[in-house]
Amino acid sequence: MIKSYLALNDIPETSEVGILEALKDLVRGQFIAIAARINALRTEKRHQLEARVKELEEKHRGPGTGKATHQLAVTSKELRALDVDVAEHAMLCTKQMYYVGVNKAG
Image 1 (cartoon, rainbow, N blue to C red):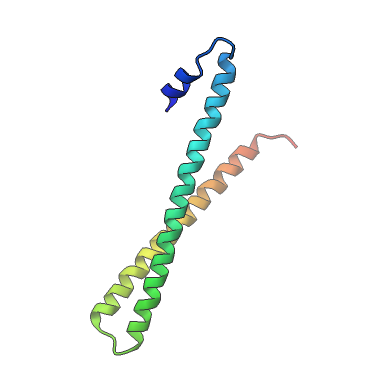
Image 2: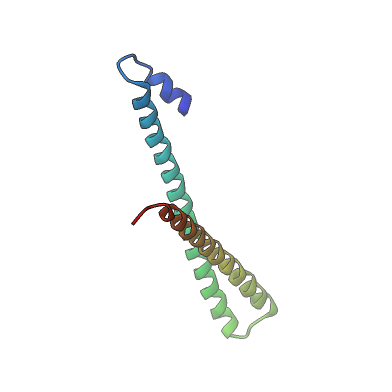
């Protein structure tokens, strides 16, 4: 992607600084697109797991079997792991924002 962008914009009228600034914006946009895709997949997986837990809880309320109980425990564990990942990411972002703002006067 970077090589093709630089080859496409290799014209003498454009300064190297301008090309690099535009390239930086392009790469930032790609990272944002990737992050949005990951977030959408995570949200979709969360909805699927929540629906599965609800379904298994309904099965468990009736004449429950050991298999339904086991599946409910496994699915709930997956859902909790997903929640832990989201919380961990939020903590990392909070820590990063703290250190970014620490060097500013005022």
